[in-house]
Length: 368
Image 1: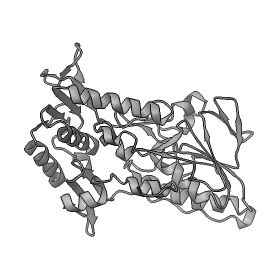
Image 2 (image 1 turned 30 degrees about the vertical axis):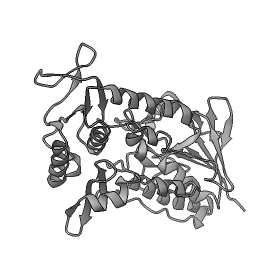
Image 3 (image 1 turned 135 degrees about the vertical axis):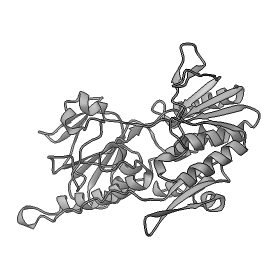
Image 4 (image 1 turned 90 degrees about the vertical axis):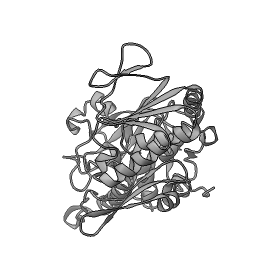
């Protein structure tokens, strides 16, 4: 016996995990504008290497046993009737609603279009531009910028590659100076030019870029690995701007419910529960929200179960590959310190496969 209708808007890491967790106990409908799951962790390599073009795409068809996946775009939430309205006009009734629309990432970590073929075509365009470029500029020295620079260098050992970062050291958001030094050392030993304290902006001419001091860099192709934007514009347009904080994230309470609502949750990159927008946090939030949703659906009145509270993850392993066989791993250890591990650990944990087998298993497919 399945209890209640749960509509999950967004089929990214958090949405998929939560839908799967609730599949045996509720009538789950997962809504996503894409026709496949997008394994974003593999997208930077896919944007550089043709043999990875289709690796990030995993079908949704084996995810749910009882529930269903609807390919469509949510445009409105009718909280009075408790229905999600799709662009087609279809209405999906809910007892509990989950917003898991994630965040928008810069190219090539963006899913372009709505089908795997359209997204793969976008990857192919980046691959061709990288293959033909004399000079590639990557802006942003966080984990994504470092990883992308390394992938480009390994794919194009003969090209000029520059990584420009506005901060004083690479990976500075991780809080580990040692990890930043390790990344810079690897890049510079592979002839990647690293420019620190270099806040870049596009110049007036195509292919021209300026730093804050007025210096000019000319490049044939550029990537901007400078952060993400929560996918919440649709909520603002639908009249739910009061659900959002100034940065555009959905405001949630400690139980991951949208503030002021007992039957609406928000999980993953889309909410304001934690500053650390990484996959482990999204999965942890999905697990906790699934528990709280089950408690909400299975209890009433004076017997209502108390929800569990989410504790933001401030210290978690961070893995930054330098291509498929090297990288740096930051591992928190007791006492507030962080261990910095090298190529062997990083290769086994992430760099070689970019966690693709893990995500394929999550969606009901074999690891291969």
